[in-house]
Structure formats: C-alpha cells, structure tokens
Amino acid sequence: MDIEALLTELLNARGPGGQEDEVRAICLRELKEVCDDTHIDSAGNVVGVIRACGARDPDTAIRVMAHLDEIAMIVKNVRDNGTLEVLALGGAQPISFGVCPVDILGDEKCLPGVLSYGSMHNSGRTSNERDVLAGNVQWKDVYIVTRKAKVELEQDGVRPGTRVVLSQHWRKPFYVHDCVAAHFLDDRAPLTAVIHCAWLLQAQKKALQQDVWFVLTTLEEESNAGALYAASRLPGETTVAVEVGPVLEEYGTELSVNPIINTGDQKGYYSRPVVQALIAATRRAGYAPQSALLVDFASDASAVLSTGIDAQAGCIAIPTENTHGFEMVLLDGISACAATLVEYLTSPASGGPDGKKE
Image (cartoon, rainbow, N blue to C red; front, top):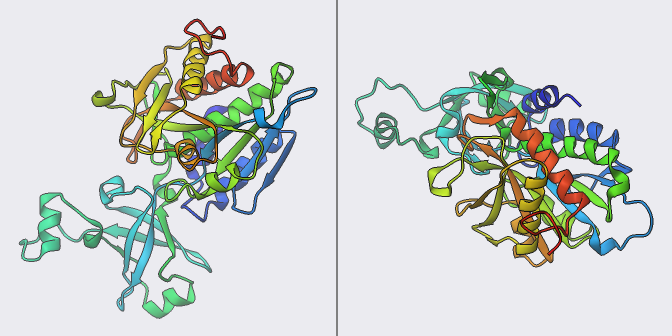
C-alpha cells in the first residue's frame, strides 16, 4: 500500500470527536480490503478482524486500537453579531492552532471562519488584550469571525455544540528532509500504521495463533468512550494502543524511526508481559525500542486497563515532535511501527530480551 498517499488523504479528512465521518469512511474502505470481516459498531468505531487459521480460544484475541478523532473546538455560544465563542474539544489549546482558517461543521452546511484573538495593536486595557500581548492566550480570549448574522447561522445549523475544525486549507502535509509535518498526525499517522499492519498481517495470516481485532475508535481525545465500548463487547483480554509519542528530553525520546514503547502514563502502568513483548518485537523488526514512561499522556489502552475491562494492555507510539501542534514524524517511523506490530501479533508471547519466550 502507498503509505504517503493514505496519510495525505487522512490528514485532509476532518474528524472532530463525535463527528469523525470523513475519517471513518476512509478507514472502513481500507480495512475492508484485507480483513475477514469489517463493520461500524453502534458507538461509531471502525472494527475489522483477521482471524487465525484453525481452532483458537476467543480470549486470546488481541485488540489493536488507534483513534479516529482529532483535537478540535466546539461552539459554546453564538453572539448576536455572529461571532462564535468556542471551547476545546479534546486536548486542544489556542496555541495548538494559532490564528487560522477554520471549517464550521453546521447541520446544514460547512461554513468558513477565522479563529481570532483580536488585534495585537492594543493598549492592554482589558484582561483579554493583556493575555494576547503576553502570549498567554486562553479560550476565553478566542472567538471565530463568521461574517454572518446570527439568524443566518441558525439557518445553517450552527449552534452551541457545533464542531469547529482546522480548515482543509491548512491540512496539507509539509515535508522537512526525512520528515512529514502536519496538524493531526495524532492520530492519522497511527491510523496509517495500523492499516498498513493489517495489510502486512493478511499476508502472514498462517502465522497467527489468535484473532486480531483492529478497532479504530471514536472520542479518544475526550473520554475514550469508543474504546471502552468496543473492549467491553469484543473478544480478547489484551489491548494494544497505537499512538503518537512525544519527543522530549524528560522522557529520553528522540525523533527517529525507532518506536516508543510506553511503559505507563497518567492512567497507570502498562502490563509488563505486553511491554516486554513489544520491546522484543521492536528488536526482531530491526529497530531499537525507545522505552519511556509518558507521565502526561493517556491512551485507549490505558483507559481500558484502568477500568478493569481488560486483563492486559500496552502502547506503541510513533516518535512525534510538537504533539498537539504542528506535528512531525518520519514516514519510515510509520513503517517501523507497522512492522513491529506484525512481529508482536505473530508472536505475542515472545517477551525475552532476545525475542525468545521467557
């Protein structure tokens, strides 16, 4: 499969939490090509399965999760002059977007707008003006200019609860030497890696000892609701989340092809056998694992594990600069993640330092 083409298509698709239709359609199309069965569940997750040959215990199934949604905004209030007050949808901050073009996803149509903080040519007389001058912009300082009357916006289905996303005008990938940079590589790069893994795994299906469920989840950035719904209904007792991993000195991580194996985050510590198996799989795939304890982080897998739905969980991440901003990853980092997942899924019990079963 063409990783770069798929990633570009996914980046251009808009997918705020609870309204991931554009991203969902692409992922369903791709998984249908290689999975034995695919469907969209009642929560809006894309679900596909590659079944092991021969007899198998359903409890040994492994769920691989990556999320469909992106950080975005949600309308809090429509002012009388037609400007919109917005709040974060997911882990967004105003600095994540800057002053920029946005798409307002009304019930009837998609409208253009501009995310604004107000003019920098101000005297600092109000608290909002002082925030802007100090570079300490908060959501209370932010508004969206629509140039439409309130009644027109109502007719277009723009109201409190309407999603607002970064415009497609600013979603094109930008290449920096061996890296691709863009907004929303979280979680479009992991989605690409998971789909690539499914393509590779179908060719090695005979090596599977258990079924593999690919679950592309809704609402991860807000509540992990999609993952919790799927994990409580699908077979298996192990979930592995595929994520972007922050490149920071405090975590000892670097921007490279080498996957980050997350050992724990703010929801708890990942299961030691799964962590060991992912580390071993990384080495078998020919890469050097970057083990990291990502304190200010969470994933679908840690949410599922912390609620007691799953017996075991792990997380593999693609090293990413500027997470929740204008992110950067190596295209080869996506391939490395997919190759590591295939090694893990075809031999999940091999957790020793040399890749042999302990």
